[in-house]
Amino acid sequence: MSDLSIHRLKDKLNLPAFFLELWRHGERNPTRLYDLSFSKLKDFPEGMAQLTKNGIRQLYTLGQNFQAKYVEDLQFISKKYVNTEIYARSTNVDRSLVSAMAFYSGFYTSDENSTDSRILFAPIPIHSITKTEDFLDILGIRCPRKNDLWKIVDSSDEIQALLNQSYSILSDISIETGIPFNFYAMTHIFDAAIIETLFKMPVPNWVKNSMIEFEGLFVNYTLTLYGFIPFKTRNFDNLQTELTKATSGALITEIYDRLSLKIKCQKMNESKNKECGPINAQKLYTYSTHDLTVVSLFAGLGFKTFLFEKYSMPAFGSTVALELWKNGTINESNNNEEEENYYIKIYYYKTFNATNPMNLCDLLKPECSNEKGCPFSYLKKRAELLRPKPDWNGMCSQRATTTAAAVS
Image (cartoon, rainbow, N blue to C red; front, top):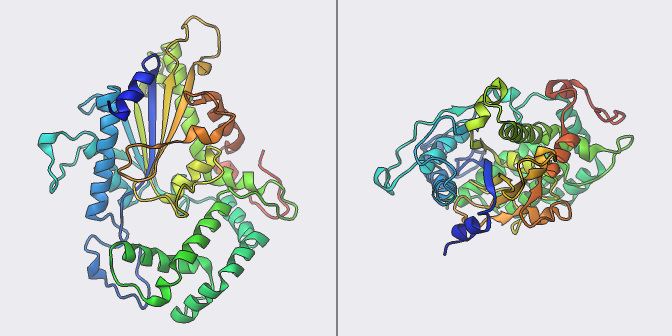
């Protein structure tokens, strides 16, 4: 019996209500080349920063794996595309958009319409908004408060200590390339070198010898910027929470609000309510994003880290899955708050081809001590803590300084 079949038997008394997935796009080319690189533009025929053919195949495979679980095993989503069941969201970046196309092509594939050498793209609409307004695009969104908070982090003792530990490699890279001694200015060099190494291309020794240390520095810097590491600055005692609000708050509250509405509309059978119209039939909502968006979701959900096994950023095609389930043994006539009848399973697929994901609820004990998963109240608590106030734009307009108070 397969793992998926066992999974289904265990949940036979419970009912799937709504599934949400957020993944990092597939394998891509470097965003740009660096001076003294051995590579040339012609070495990347798809274009800089674009998804590779292998990246398309990765997300296609990811889609097939979720088809096996959601369509074939759980029989929750229709085999053929029904537009009211699916909503696909992506950042307004080519590699994310194409990743979403590839995912749904795999999700709705059948043996007769695909071969190893040919993928038929499924005609699924992919929705996106402007980068500067999209909280899924952490680096591209316009949010002065987030930028202020990151500047506070940049000047903190913790970050200065990290930079001092890596002074030697940063200094060597600066001397070799003429780039100013600046962490952010050097990230594109190592981004390109990591991908060149992945593609088995030659990499200059002066960067090859520094790659492991720089990746560790990048991971630690990211842990700090996204609020994983607690520390205080002068007159700013809650910087960790404020960082998580600015990078994860909008995402985690949107997820909670969507699932909460799903519960409300199911419980009250509000078929004639305009607010319930789209969500009533909807079963799967997906986000096609970036490694930093995966990181921000981990922070928003309250995890202490995004590192599992390898000390590196989330891999191409890595996916966080939130599954909303209803306890099938609850009597519909009880007077408890309807959200108490639901729970959430949180899984992490560390690679695009993972079929046995990590059960992340195990890492959230004791709050998620139920063997089924996390109570829905846990997600509600995280959303209440991190919700941008008065709203996203209002929070972003409130500038942060070392003497600023938290946004309440």
